Image 1: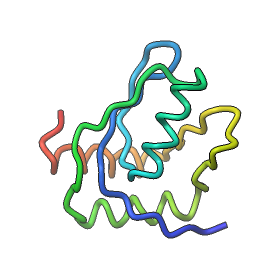
Image 2 (image 1 turned 135 degrees about the vertical axis):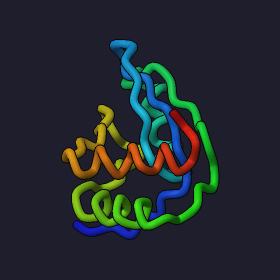
Image 3 (image 1 turned 180 degrees about the horizontal axis):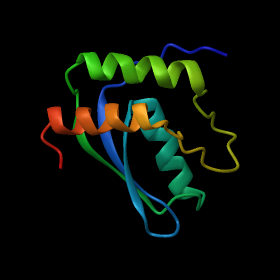
Length: 102
């Protein structure tokens, strides 16, 4: 099922094992991550940057996310981490670099 999510923030998500990853998301996805923390599926989520510029990399990553994933609803019983291809990983790295997040 295709979606039309607009991604406009960068967040850091801490898994239950303590490892962290950075994700390009939006306020809905961030709210779902916060709910996942409350339910014990994640340890922490924090926004690193709001209102990131809608660069070509962000547009390509949005297309990848919208084509491959569905935003979890409030009835979630686990956290679905968006698994990335090497190309998608590079897009995220490029977005982080564009936004001066190392």
